[in-house]
Image (cartoon, rainbow, N blue to C red):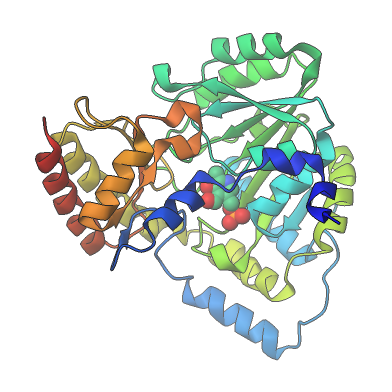
Length: 391
Ligand SMILES: Cc1ncc(COP(=O)(O)O)c(C=O)c1O
């Protein structure tokens, strides 16, 4: 008997992520310092922790409704109205999910069928493709490397037309992991003008929306395409709450009524205690991201300064907490090998760009969700490494 042959065949398309493979390949390096993590190094704000403790003491230990606590959905509705000028009815247009991850799973499994395609500007977060593959759909990447990682309306329309009827959705993620690129109001409006011509979903993962560094606040594509957009957000990045696992899904009522079916049978509901914490975060803690943002900007500028001096080409990121840097000419362009050598010789881990797809090859990603002390040491060691490997 060989039950391994009886799994869903689509699982064969899913490999252990390159990030995990890389992590494993360097895990034996003693005292390794990591600039790899996609989670804030800050702790969750104290008032949020207190709210969750109070919920425990208050015996809030029962399931909430499938869409989540009404008070939390009301707070989420108020939050996106105030911050991004979006209007979602808390009664039937918002779902509280287990992180943005579950919102993505619930969405992609609800909309995709075998043979469908979904467009994704790349390099991209590697969490999307496996979900699409599991249901027999395929991600088609749009290469943005030649345009400083920015998707233009022309690139988008060309890709949409190439896909034809197979195309079910366009997946956007901005501020973008791994590049930190984000889009201005004019850029979003121009992309929306293309998208509204086609009967396709726009799945917009905006989990880094509270971490933008330019003067202009984040602009959600849902503001221009409310009928087409399934908007995904969460508290992991904005409130340093990765482990609480709270995400949010916003969509028009007729779409939410469908999405709730996949959400319901995936998870029933998000953790009640976490939802009470999230309620506090999105009401009293609306601006909790601000002090973290200030600190992230200092770190970002420091790294850009140091790495540019070493010959790395960097598009200055306007959001998230990543630097995506081109390995200078004359050094190993195999990003996996480059990062492996750096980790083994200098005990600092950064992520090979190829972990974000074929268009990420030749780049490395550093997370600046790490203390300034760690960052300083890492930059000193990178300087040594580059000097030792210069041709
Ligand atoms: C672009 C992007 N989307 C989604 C997620 C997952 O977030 P969550 O913790 O809310 O599941 C991450 C986490 O790194 C991310 O970078």
